[in-house]
Image (tube, rainbow, N blue to C red; front, side):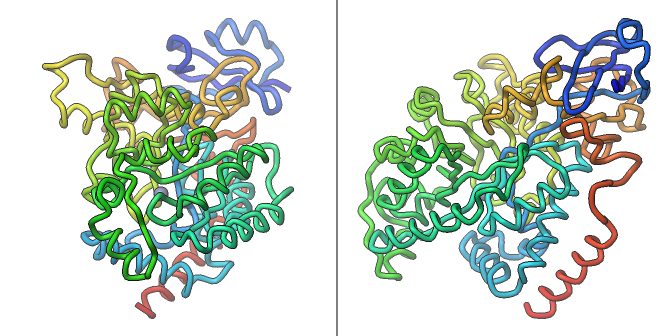
Length: 454
Ligand SMILES: [Zn+2]
């Protein structure tokens, strides 16, 4: 049974915008895109769903999230001027105060928020991958959930690695055809060089995707370049030996062989032109998280350089504990404005435009998560992952170019429908796959618990 999803504008992203168009969906697949009248002729039996003054685009991709931390939204803001105090409060809340069910609810609510904002696919880093996998699967999104591993002390590398391997073994079969498992050595300042090497070899042998935080802060650069700064002091206080490699994070990871696993690297702020070339040559991928980076005062990644070198780059919200929303249209707008504001490209070259940002939010994210063959564009033979966004709002009219209106005048709150593999996950104002009201009530309960004990 074919259904035609029609709207005033279809943005396949990989090909030109279609005015008054339709997307034909059969089962989990897109079978055709084109002008509405032509597709009605081609599929005379199809059910027609008309969204009128709206745009149909590929499902938005959030290439870097921590869904399990959704309950910590708005909770850590007083600490954000001090990244270490922020990390400490986060760790204490997550480890000591949240029960396994709290973590599930938190992750599921994050997936609900994503679905409501037109996000169909996530790259999610989690310390409790089983829980996050279940949440992504239950809400009905696509994604990769990366089981995190920590361990800055080289002496315990083998032990930490074996624990990771056991967790991954236990998780085999927990995903499905849409939700995959990966591994995430957290960051260069929390994972020792020997542990990074063990995890890389393991990921290559087992064909597991790797995600890592990299080149995020000045403190990390200081640790890498000359072994000074707060991260170095923190390691010294714990009696952990650290020999600074004297190079950038990217060159450090290249030297250790980590880049041979073509990891997805979140942030990549402290990267120079040579680093970007290294990332491209090694086939590494990037999650650009401009709002999280700005909120922490970490700086900004050279987004325009990633585009110029044709890196596989997607947008990431990072955790909503640091963002504070999962909204990829807002992230696209922010990335574009920040790029233009920072370097005044009017004077030096082509400015990042709405088309660039939409590509990053869709096909770029799909490439970053290695699902570009399935999703990230509207075309026959692709999975039916799409977002339908109203362009009829007071804040959007009049619309001359739908891509411009989507990036500069729209947000996730304008989404009317989100579909993953042909399944309508969000429609008519609600996520239909889970009991949103129960989750909402539980989220408030978790907040009361966290507040009461803080
Ligand atoms: Zn992160």
